[in-house]
Length: 374
Ligand SMILES: [Fe+2]
Image 1 (cartoon, protein in one colour):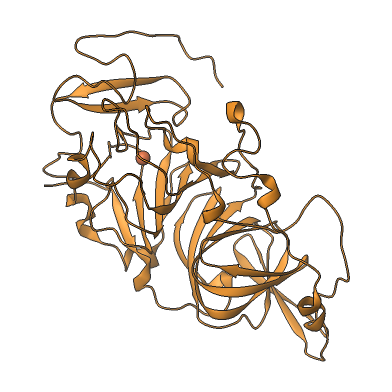
Image 2 (image 1 turned 90 degrees about the vertical axis):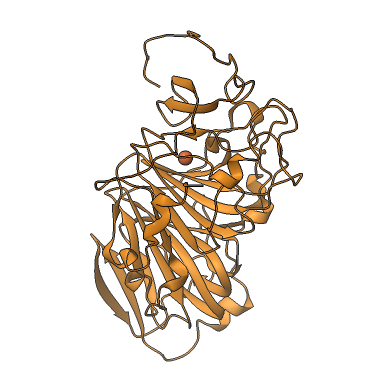
């Protein structure tokens, strides 16, 4: 990290511990560098910082109901673009039937999150069954296809010109949050061998520089009889995550980092107990995410800090304004009615500004900016 100018001050009526011991009747707002890792300031406000009465101009919180998108053709390269920048590309793919061709992403690693349905993956590395809640990591260049056992809804997150890695686990060690032994790779099994036979010609749709080319083979190129190495397609299900928590401190979203790319992170919110210390915050603190654009895809459960958000929706908070709990959630700032959260959500935080793709604008909930008004 950069060598920031050291400052540690307490001014006026303030807490000395972030996210706890807030002065009576105040709302905490965090302003920070490097996501939640760099220097930060914590302000204690008389009013919730999301209490705006009007919001004008191109910057605003946005929400998209991806459930309203029509099923896309059976190629991931025809999936609906949602958000993108030079380093990250998000698509939503409602695939009703099996892919007739193979796909290969030559632009970067692809992270596939299975929101609904079930499918069988056939790829260079073999066969792997997929179900809702699975993350599937496809290294750049992998040839793959899906056979649907039920129509699938998938969030595709491309690390453009980059690779996915695991985050540094620091104090809690390599086996916390999830043990790398839980990462499943495809197998060269009977089902994989069985799909190799046949006289059918196969097309490989290769995406490079966001343009698609096709390579046709008179045989099935997924014909490996074995492989070895340190690189593979990998799967983990969100139910196998064991989130960090502190009973006395609301941990920042970065504690839930699942995968790292060069210019963005992917975090997973999975069920965890609420904090029990009576003076600790039980909801996300207000903050600006000044260095990151922030995207949340809601997978399952009850999204405890947001109102009117259902599974299959995606919210986008560009850097530049404060966001935080909705008024109903804020009323439970210190006391929750349930012992634990029961939400699953995928967060994507990007270092560079994201653009909203036009098709996503067709399913935008334009009233989202007003949803903090009580
Ligand atoms: Fe945030």
